[in-house]
Image (cartoon, rainbow, N blue to C red):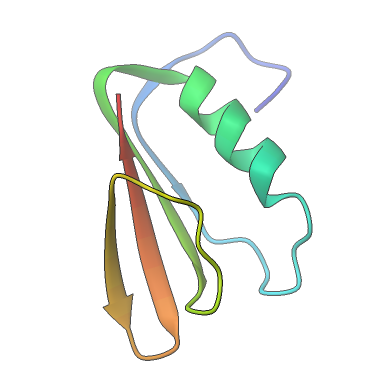
Length: 67
C-alpha cells in the first residue's frame, strides 16, 4: 500500500497472527482512507491498538478506525 497514492472507503487487513509490523500497517492504512472511511484490522485478542471500536470473536478481535 505504501507504493500507491490511491485512497479507499474501506480497508480490511488480516495479517498472519505472527505479524510484527502492526504499527506500520495501521499508520499506512489510515493514510489511504477517504474521509468517512474505515480501516478494519483482524488480530489476536491479547493485543490492543487503541482503535475507535473493537468487536471480539473468541480469540480474535476486529479493530475499527474511522476517518
